Image 1: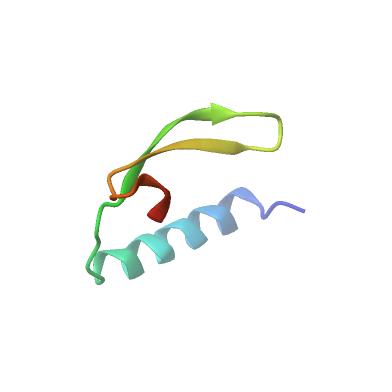
Image 2: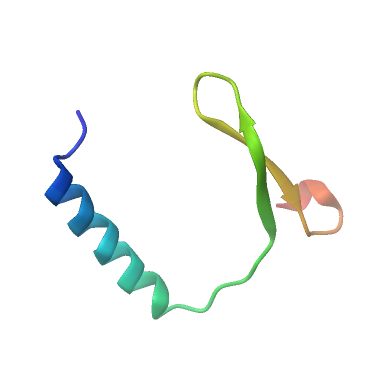
Length: 52
């Protein structure tokens, strides 16, 4: 069951505030979508690439 619109916005704003206080490290990027289950294709910046 999905949260209602206002609840969803509140959850997103809280998670963004939490992330802004943390250090981030870019290890890859989303390269595309795959399948009907919402899978994503990733491009890894790590070496070897499977270490993501």
